[in-house]
Image 1: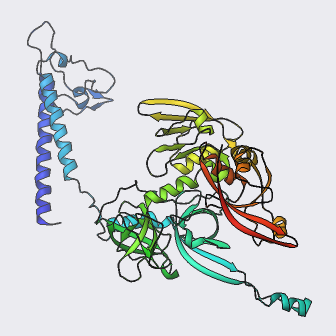
Image 2 (image 1 turned 180 degrees about the vertical axis):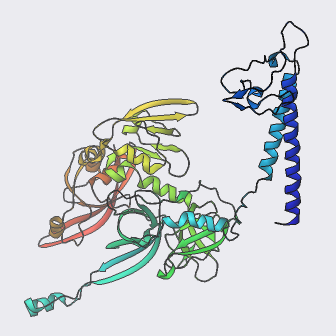
Image 3 (image 1 turned 120 degrees about the vertical axis):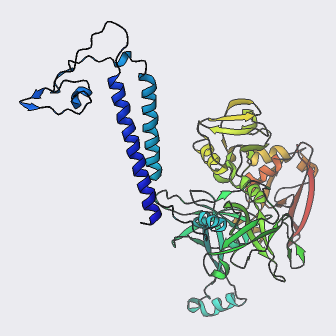
Length: 548
């Protein structure tokens, strides 16, 4: 111990001894205090008694024993014979206050002098960047894909006919690619770029802990190059999701972090700044169909595509998408606002469960706001309106759009769903019953809107027409006096597209037509068969008609 410590200890000891002496003197003064008036007799002090033949020790100024000072007899068997007059002393209250003050001061001095364990020094390396990476890294995955490419030789048919059973076709080629992704929900939904998983025959993800799990593509949106995957897990395993930043909560020059799997090297992190909020990336001399890309100088390389771009709060602000190869330090990411727009289309009862709800809810870190309500839909009939905030679903408050969709679609086609919504200060409860899409969007709706009866194309019908693809629809009937009849449509015409889109089934075709207002124009892409004697052929064309 140092000299300074020993001096401090000696001074403290002497001070505590002084406090003890003062306490003893104060107690003696209180015990000696007698009333100055009144008729209470004060007997003289008696000599010390003995207990069992052993004289009791006396320590008081008048020969009192310790027990007598405490108000007992010398043997500790009862009240002392000496009368007590503490309650009548006019000085008792100030002295007791002094006693409390001295005891408190001594306790505080002792606590302050007690040695304390020094706090551990903070690790200067663990700055905001390191903390953000530690938060996000468990949600980052590496994505691997396998694509089977079928090859067909021009001489396959000839060789098969000549060699018969001895001919073996060349096996299909297998192509492999790598990318990145980020987990956005504890049930294992993964967000990535569509170009990473497009046309993949098999997709798997590698988690931060080294495990590899299969994944299934769920949805994709070409215009924003965003795709949604679902990890195939067992026993309801939960995953660590990333947090979402608020739309447009971006600061030029703020520090951003790009995570991913560049060149297949494994999990990698790079840091930079947000260089621009709005940018269009060139590709082969043409602008991509994506607006308002984020620009950063954080290193984004092949393999980083689909990985997260986060801020120092560990919040997702974008999805890495591209790099400008002719320059250094110019990378691009899809802003979280565009990502949320895609998720609002992915996580709907219609997209996930083929259930018709008819309302579009905003995705993101904020409240669940109804953005659109479809006329005639279950949501419209229930009285839901745009800009209302959804607070509860069947008594449960969903944390995000994914949880809301999960609660909404659970047995929603068999029983009513209760929603609590709020607009301003007005809060109300509504009940909605979802419908199977095929029960409303079907061939009957198409006939009602246009007057034509459509049948989905099959491989057999395509073979009859000599077509290589089985996409599209066949007109099997035309209603007299209908818009289709006025446009001179006939049975056996093939409908290949509606307003430039190729719907995969009758449900999607009916949705396109249902969205049209009365007397609105729709464009149909057709393949029309013709026959002249023994010659047959087809010609392509398009026609416009008004819907009812």
